[in-house]
Amino acid sequence: MRAMHDDHRGLPELETVAADYLEREGPDLLDRWERHQAFWEARMAAGLDPQPRVMLDRVGPEAHVLSRGQDRLRGVNFASPDYLSLSSHPALAQAAREAIGRWGLGASGPVCVQGGSLPQQVLEERVADLLCCRDATVFPSGWAATHGVLTTLLREDDHVILDPACHPALREAAARATANRHAVSQRNPGAVAAYLALLRLRHPRAGLLVVAETVCAADSGDQDLRALRDACREHGATFMICAGHDLGAIGHGGLGFLGEQGLAGEVDIVVGSFSASFGSAGGFVAGNASGLKPALLGFAGPLLHATAFSPVQACIVLAAMDLLRSAEGAQRRRRLMANAMQLRQGLAARAFTVPGRPSGIVPVEIGSIADARRLTRAATARGGLVELVEHPEVPRFSARWRLHVMADHTEAQIDRMIAIAVAAREEAQARSPG
Picture (cartoon, rainbow, N blue to C red):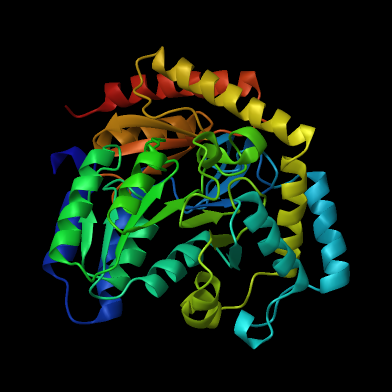
């Protein structure tokens, strides 16, 4: 645990604070977190706590933010997943103004209590059409969509196969539904097929679900979706993909890697989010089974017990879908990919490890948690706003940057981020205790 030591004199070692918290944890639920807070305060005092931040202006390639320690920071922004730079687009803003005038501000209640709206219904039809599916159901967030569909479909004796690097939201939702969870790398469809064969042999009456991501948020990796789909069909398993980081932003018509692999309409369930490419919060579940939508409306907790998707947000996403199918949308996708390539190649040329394939996510492997925190502190001080990813999104005792590229980033801003990363690495290495 020495890697967590910082070079600020007089500051208690962070691992000592964490160990003290674990040893003295008692039965008082709130007191446990009071003790845990000491670790975060020590981390903040050392300048090793870059998150969370509060945006003081609109999201864009340059950002003005307020840190948890109340420091005002300005810099080039690679921490906001707004891949096509639509969060402040004039067409979407106009759609929001018109929607407020006609539909008011919110849905006022759950879908099952007259909380649905006509814009939401139209949006569900458009999402289903985009994905070549029978139905789609909109949720208040991508997390809610993931949680809703997994807890509705899976029973205690069912089995789910997930990639070890899949998003924590998927692991959390699956854990709430069943104890029968299996971590199998989906970069190896043969291994998934073999595991499905074994599960089907041992549990002939159990439901089997394979969950894959079109783009892994941790490393921008993708899978052979067709091979996974075929394995599911062979062994009577349901195949669900999560398209949160590429739908709208990549590929012809914005269909992402699902469209690139020719699988639109060929997957049992598609789960996605509107936040990264559509300028709005929200998520959806789409599929071809006639019973899926009624099941979600009747049993998915996020639809039964939470306020429905706002008609204003629905109108924003509809405007985004119109834009994404236009010439401007195609141009924005080309700019995003060009920017991603420039950043990836520039970092790789300077001996940074950049895994995965080009997408709106540019992951940068750093190594230990201590190195990553020092590097992030140095980058932030130089005006580089980045997302530091630690456990549980990556394995314990490791960390990486997840840089989010925007269509509106300029070549100069990308070059600036590369130069910041290089300078921050030199400073972090110079100040490393070892």
